[in-house]
Length: 85
Ligand SMILES: [Zn+2]
Image (tube, rainbow, N blue to C red; front, side):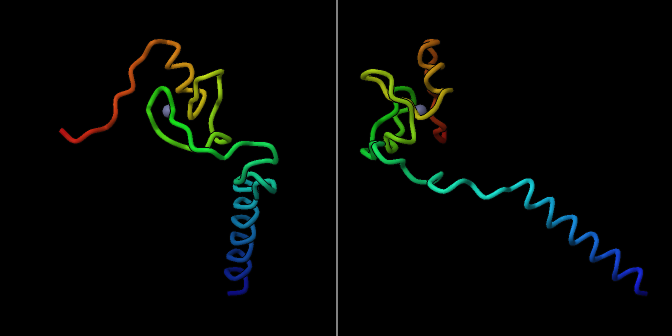
């Protein structure tokens, strides 16, 4: 009987360690803008999504939400919004 309890405790400890390892706490300030970063809302030139400037990529006069949209824009792709037909 004590073996069962011991095994359960070991499993709990292992999963706790795994959780800590897989989902480490983000460094302080990860979810917020760093000093000097602009928080003005801007519209992505690719998907027209609006988000704060510090969360995206500024390229001269253009703005993109992420690397994918930046490269897709330069690749000449068109963004297809998921609209119900
Ligand atoms: Zn975008």
